[in-house]
Image (cartoon, rainbow, N blue to C red):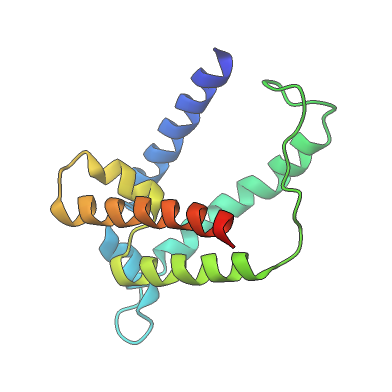
Length: 138
């Protein structure tokens, strides 16, 4: 039960951070990606702030013998850059650059009922399904 509560709290904190930093606004993201006209550095500042918190905190957490809400740490087994990672990153970047949304903000904005966000989330879920299907197929 503690894990569910912490997951909800983490999600709410992440969503609040997105809202406060205005990263729910696709125009902010697209403004960051558009370096040819009125470049908006806000996203770089948000990412930099996140890294300033994440790097020392994650190092400190991993020095602990066990996590607080689990029996052991669950870290990725793969540490190499491989083809699926690159293909996934490219597809994510293309979608992000075309629409200005990534999964977190899209899920939050889904509550607003915008047809473009509904289409984006539908495409995102289709892509997730296809990735799982293709992974087991090949």
